[in-house]
Amino acid sequence: MKVFSNSSKIRRSANVMLIFTTIIASLIVLILAISAYLSDRLTEQWLKYATIALIVYTSLIIISMIHLLGKILKNNLGVEQLKTLAYCDNLTGLENRRAYKEYIDSINDSKKVGKDNPHLSIIMLDVNGLKKTNDIYGHLAGDELIIGSSECIKNVFSSVGRCFRTGGDEFVVIAYMKHEQFVEKSKELENILSTWKGEYIDGISISMGKADMMEYPDLSADELMVMADKLMYKNKQNYYTSQLMESSPVVEGDSKTIRKLRYTDDFSLTKYTMPVIRQMAEVIPGGFFIYRENEKREIVYQNTKVLEIFGCKNVDEFQELTDNSFEKMVHPDDFPSIQKSIDHQIDSEDGNSMDHVMYRIIRKDGQIRWIDDYGHYSHSPDYGDIYYVFINDITDVVSQKQGSNH
View 1: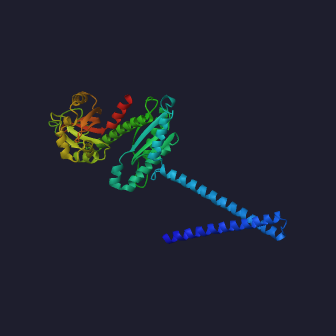
View 2: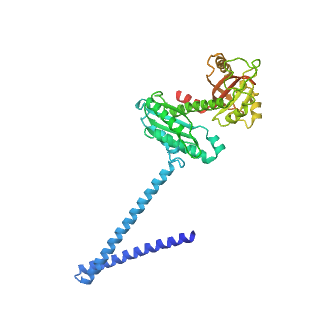
View 3: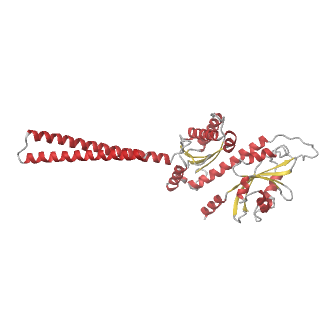
């Protein structure tokens, strides 16, 4: 490689010297011809030399200008290519996180927010089941799932806004449309996702959350994004809840041992379904745990994300920190109000409802964090009265909201 590089440099130097020598020679002949003309000694031969020198000199000037113009165009083209690469996602061809960040900042800095533009909508989208696809079918299938999702999103929303891939399985659409149009686009997206087929994937599922300035006129674009992300996360939790319920087989038991509650057939937790729930819970995008609604409120199961939220390296650390009790998971000042909400759902006649509460926790390192909690009460033949709970750390969202209020 070094030999070729040196040869290239030698050729370039030789070309430069040749052009330089030719220009100097042409200039000398041209100067001599002008001098002869001014001293009335210009002959036909000198005139011929002068003409040739002028033609050569002019040609070299034109060639040099063309060469320079070519380099300028080439450099500009290189800059544009670099810019495209910097703002484009390699896998999907959509705009990437950097492009999204600059665009959202430009919206915040402009007057395109709030009452001046009520149709601004931010849509957060997250592909369901990417980890499971990678684990079962391999990363080629996972890439196909991402590419297929991007194609569907672009086909539906590119006519009303810009589409970005901001993370592994995360997409954002910033669009300008009325709510009725969003409803139509959502149905269109659902249809195109369900019918999409690739080499490995048949059908795609995406969780989505949308927030717009019509509903939240006082929010900035960043705050609107946080709101859309929260709604998307809620939909994703509902998706995995439905997956768990569908995967739990119906288990019949002795009527003397199974309490006749309206929740008996709903989301049954038994020694047969527990392995399925463990497997599904590890792909849930957030914390998931199960606890008995008894005097101790004993925790039956928690996924890895719960350990991360509480800053614990393993189950032993988590059980030591919480005494393996839901009550000890919650900040002591917040638990009384949480228990009231739990009691309210148990007494409710709506057996399909998800109880939603927010509370603080104290991590292993002493940090106080805010938690968003969606719980569902049920009855298990093997475990009795139980709660299925989905949690997510929302400390940053709460801090941002508190800061904006001040």
